Image 1 (tube, rainbow, N blue to C red):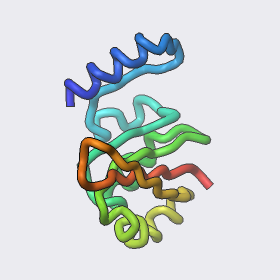
Image 2: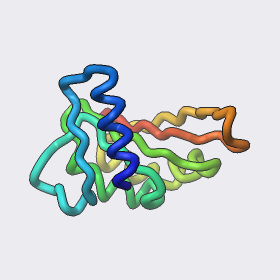
Image 3: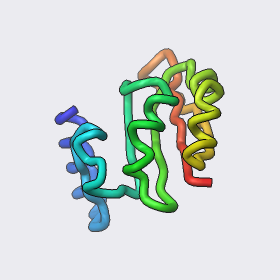
Length: 112
């Protein structure tokens, strides 16, 4: 979403990072055009489909970072075949927020 990208741009500028490029696009628009160290996704698709959609965008040594809900572990389990096929290892991190009742789960998939 545009507002999230604008927020990220503000954060990058505030922190003074000079090695970050924010690209707001759909995965299919970028295939073959670029590789990214980090590809992020929120509320896009289940992990199996998300891996298939984004794997060609992940640079060697890069990662897919997906924000998920409470079903994150089940999605990772269901995506085991796709993760192996694309040489990705998934780790799930629970992130609690004092503003929200439910935790957010961040799934980080790195090349094996």
